[in-house]
Length: 578
Image 1 (cartoon, rainbow, N blue to C red):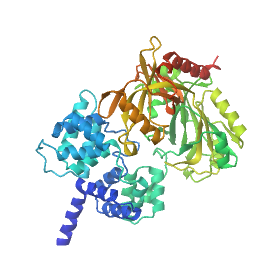
Image 2 (cartoon, rainbow, N blue to C red):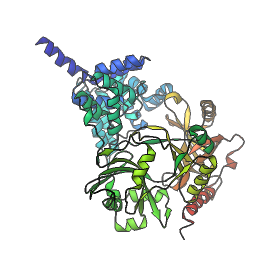
Image 3 (spheres, helix red, strand yellow):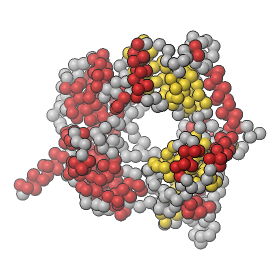
Image 4 (cartoon, rainbow, N blue to C red):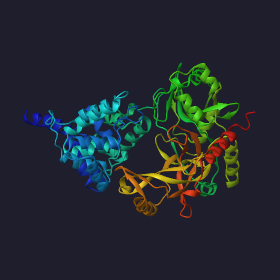
């Protein structure tokens, strides 16, 4: 009886959040992979079902399962303000400490150690479930005055936490656990904790994409029930990137399946009998946004089959398409923002669903078949427009890739996707089985006006840059056009950081406003209209190509050039519409 009582008490203690954060500290304190897995598996095996589901999410650097619409949406400024309100530290001191540590978790740990406000519930221990419930309440807080409500909920969490618990609460909110774990480690630990084959655990992850579901199935020895089936979204296979045809040919040294890279929205089409669902890349149900596609999907059939209805899961791209040409991605976004999709909207922004892979057909899972075979199966299926099969070609030379690339760009697409014809479909995995090949639309010269501090290995350096171009009416006025943080080496970032600190106008703690002196050459894929910046435009996928030490703010580009590039891309997309 005593042993039974001790077991119950041990299980209850293991669900405490304090037990979780001490586990995180143990994992952080070792570089041994085996020890990490041992710590994890012992901990996971001690949890009840509900706590296990939460713990594996937290350990995988997530609060909600992949595909969930929920998000806490709490920024650095909200955390800093909350910490200032409940500690003995004013806003300036909070900012100074953050700059010293370069880590919001460390800041929270320090601030809570200086806490002066006493909570009525100070002695109520946080549990995994109570923390997750509070995160859920924060995520569900929307609308008028939601900012204040979120701060109050966060304040309640901090008031009931120890300094170490506050550290990890903040790390989870920011998605920056950084304790030397990957989801792969968690999968291994789940396998060991519940005596399940790692291969089976990972296959279940490929199908479900949700570590919380997989852990529960492993605990109950039900991993065999994790099956690919229609109306249950599957994690997407992802593509890697290369930058030249030469690099691609040298790497593969064999013929490749080549498709256009469409500037749309990735979507899975699921059909089961007379039910149709479309799922986004986040695995959320977006069927209501595509009524004409859902209607057309009902007429999908397999002429060679005796079945009147077929069940299937397809992978493809939804693009806005009019007069035989793709519309700008921004037109597609406008449609997606509509709560009610009217007939007028479907006429103004008609859609096409381009199918380029098949995952399931009539009870048979296709993901282990080679791509060439999956393509043959797709060619046998009859679709009704606006659902179509992707155009493809076989290329085996740099010249072949270059020719199809120019053809793709002339038609208004982004570039190419090249695929290994022998590759299987790997849900949720990125690899060099599929390769994206894109070319930057143009480059512009812009000047840094705001710089933010980086995180992790870039902590303490100003590595995120907001940049601007000249106004069309006055060379003395600057208009923000975008923000970039990629493209520079650590050495270059350190050099820029030193320079930015000498030209700082205002220090906001997590960012600085600077005199416009440092000129950057910015590459990008396209330009779209946007009310986010005062220029009225935004660069898509901007990256820093060069630091132009040879140029001054007088040499940067102006808003008319931005408009010229924007109009050029619109023209390229529509020149054959007439």
